[in-house]
Length: 114
Length: 110
Image (cartoon, rainbow over all chains, first blue to last red; front, side, top):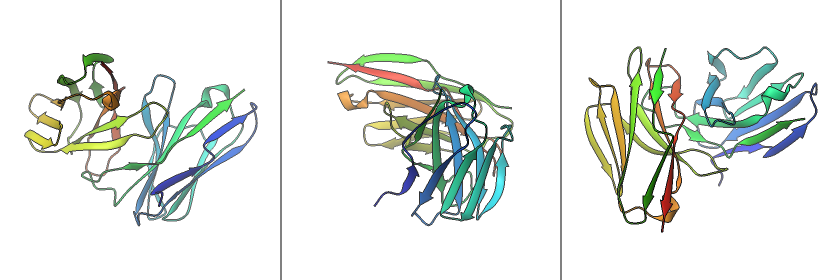
């Protein structure tokens, strides 16, 4: 029944490692997003895809690479992890990318880089 | 760019009313959202305003004044479960990103 799901929920890893976070939505939405929420609780957009096409790409290091194999999935791969990457990463989806669309968030992935 | 300001924390007692203000400066305006986020959980949608005025939804109401760049979220008949962070978010351009404020932590006391 879960609308937007993410795996894993927790991720603890060493600096320099490469890791992936997966996101799936079963709402039939066309648009998906990745957000980062840091320790100060600011929720910042990283990427947005509409029907598998990248439409928003914020100023994010090249070490972060999103991949959308189909419109129900948006994965995030992070290379050479750094301490500053520690945060909660939220996936979200919306029916389209229209301004009025509500975004539905997944449960989050808490990434800790040691 | 966009600037969104809201108070860091507010405390109120059970049964009371609390008003959370949000001011914003954006290049373009295509709607303002309020989300609720409990500790350790995902943000959940509360309200959306694109035209001036008050939108009421049960115990929660949201107001918007586009000319003043101002919105508030009104929480009535506060319950303990309303203790959470409340995020104001603005969409500037029509297909643009949603910009979030830092959130207002509401603490409801018995």
